[in-house]
Length: 412
Image (cartoon, rainbow, N blue to C red; front, side):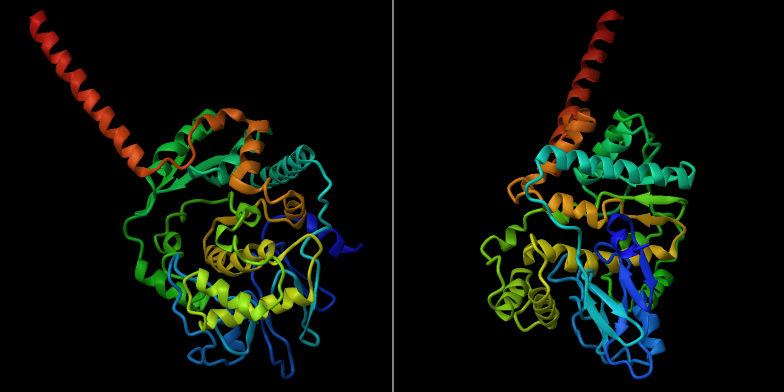
């Protein structure tokens, strides 16, 4: 059986080893680190911290000197580099052979078909996600959790699950930085589909300091404290089963910050500096070196139908930033399963034109063809709107109570 021809249809986070090789999932969400100068052996691990111990790497001798900041700059260590000298991170378009330390290319996804109709593409995406959901729910005995927000990405999964009569448990994390829309809309969305919604709150008494030490120990500081907030607060600790999410749609969106960039790589060095500057990094930032290495790799190993902008979110945002964040939850009872993360799904959506991928059109049309009632609710209402609405309702209630009081006096 030719497994490499089958696994583009696998979803979730996974690593496959066989024939002395390591293959990763579609966007490298179960990250792999390996030593770049093997002496006797090539070591591969999903834990950078463990690898530094095995290789006796001095963690103070780092290649990337930045301290990662939440939502600031390139807030991950840019692949194929890691934080440490002598340790690289495998790209989703790479396979590492641990018998000789060689890295070779692999296709990121099946062939992209730009001639396929928009309607057929949507139907195939819906069928793919439905099949995955049906397989998951049979494995977890109803303990299938969906992190639900006020946006479209998780709402798509909610609509498809409802259409397929899949039993879900929608939940929303209550955090200090949560928007009012994320407090207000998810219970309404879940109720519309006949699901019971749960708010998760931080448990009192969780030892944040101990968790912070565990975060540093496990991730070797490949995750910012801001991105680690849900783990540090222990907010998912009581959930048992499997959690799916809506993340992954970012791969298909247009990057407005790259609007003026060339789609071809005539000079990777210049493009690397431009990417760093657009993300708020100095052009001589240590992050730029990783971006340059990545651009040189995709310059050597292009994939038909994909330009470097299409690959940026897949091989940097997903495999770099999100992968490190996801690995934190390997220390909790709840298993994470990114349902959209399959090479087949990516090839379907990326076969569409960039105009068809603009403005979350795909998500809205998928909801429209599965459970359009969910579109009657707004998407990401601004906080000021909800505050105004809350004030109006409060004032209206005061007026009604006042009127009721006056009527009661007259009746007396």
